[in-house]
Length: 94
Image: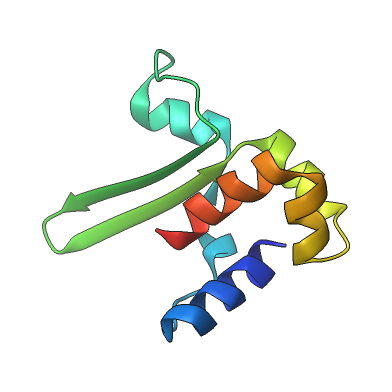
């Protein structure tokens, strides 16, 4: 589903980007970077620069990813799982 969302956003904005799925992080990775006191969130986009090196990570809550994995397409995801769909769009769009 994330790839479908990314493809649609890229078509609208006429851009091309690496596959967002290559940058997915789980909650453990987010906590490792931000600490266990990090506020709960449906999605995070994390960027870290160290000299010439830029690290990028995208977190979308595991429940949302699971919900979206069962959707039959973008329209079904938007209709049946709006909150998960919006969290995914927010994370992918960055």
